Length: 287
Image 1: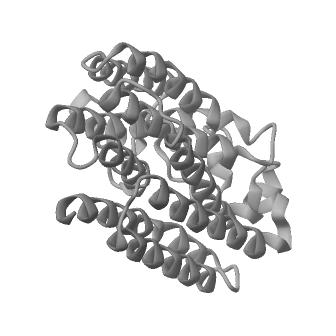
Image 2: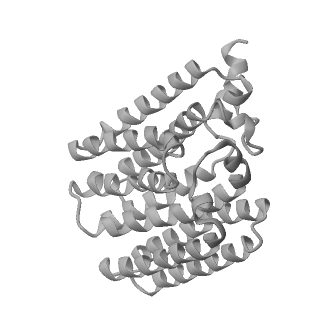
């Protein structure tokens, strides 16, 4: 099979056919860029971060499938992944991961020293997350830390500093990720129990709805504090109310813990990120 015939398999491995993960990393990145700049960030910086999100999310998917190559075939949702089916080799996956990280690093070099230093943490988090499910029931925390790391990087790129307020955004994103990735893990809970993979969905057990609800409530509370700290106006708080309503809807979706409904609840978080970004952007546009 020549390289042209392999491209669709590489694309599938990098999840270019399923961009939800890219969106879930991109929205908080845009929150941070707009808040750091007090409005529209420099175009060059915006392009660097959008491309960086696409590349690093792809890299994260590749290393995730590399780590899970021996177990994905035993899980209903993942058995058709290219590494599980043999359409892509483990060596090819490692080359792809290195290539995506390398391209991302070239982009970061166009920023400043602080952002470059922070990028090493981003790669470390992306590389270690897929292996956490073998050692802890809280891999979702590590995923949240990885997804949220674009926040300090965005502030570093725009302002050259790491103001204390950015960590409120970081914590909100980590908690939000824990909640929606628990929904994602609920889809695989039965399979994960059989093969011995750990997750918050398994650890929370029958308290999953209660705990994810508390996590979502915490996110709303922190978003309100962020609005106060950054002196955001009425439009922003309306967007937070929309996010809260979407969280309520997600809780209704997972009520009976049906796989398809849990996956719908996970996907719905794209609109949460979008709503908050619209509120931030409109505040600076109309303010």
